[in-house]
Image 1 (cartoon, helix red, strand yellow):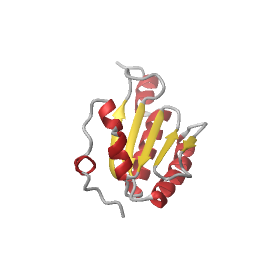
Image 2: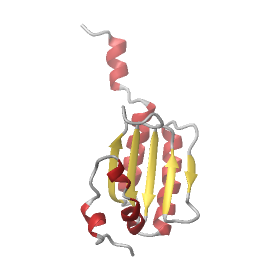
Image 3: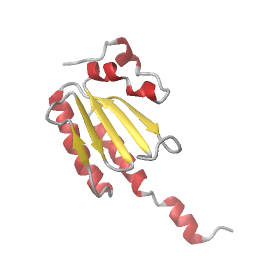
Image 4: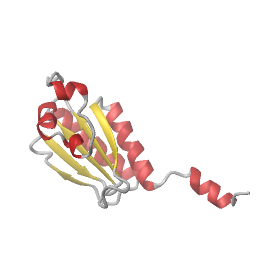
Length: 133
């Protein structure tokens, strides 16, 4: 029979799991395009998860960045660092164990970060047909 404390801890989400869920919720609520979650456990020491998504334009990326910063802090990330927000092509949000890359579709296609981790680019990004309005 399992110790009740162990069973309770298994059901309680970790800070990393709460951060990942917060990111997924924001990206869904903000209508991010083609989000991809990459599990980095055992592959990288700097984070547990990397999320890559696209936004329609710089304004969309800025809004998602602001929402992600707020939600990551609320989920337990003590330091959220952001790079590239002022440029609006590629924004890096470092929440510690969860890293988020937000791109305009054409920039995402250019860098193809998914391929670095052995994943295929989403179909619309790969074909260049993603909306860029």
